[in-house]
Length: 166
Image (cartoon, rainbow, N blue to C red; front, side):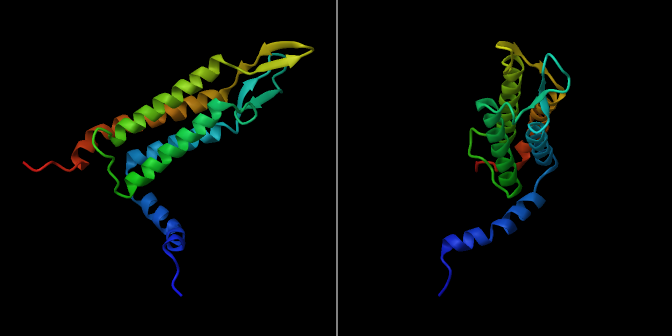
């Protein structure tokens, strides 16, 4: 008995993903690197206690809707880059570079928000905000890398888009 269509789709997924990875352009790879930097920064210390330099809180340790949104943005941007590597062109009014720029700006806005809305450090019934540590700036750099990749794509995207018949 032949396999159904649904099982054939799952079996070909690694092959299709590898093909899409090979098809990534330079700017799409830069965007994927920015996503990886942003996700990796969640494992590093974002906040430092105001009392001791040894007490830190990672992005995952202080996980909230903002860090979840960063993970979602990174996944969506990586998916878009892989689809672009496979030859997908978004429908008209959308442009791949514009989506990358929008995703990077939104991620940067969330990171800046987390810089001001820090989790409280509670000691002896007193709440004090954590101090910022280096990894939150790494996350901001990852978001700005995505923006830069989108802006670098803009001139080349016009050549990729098919022209309407005259």
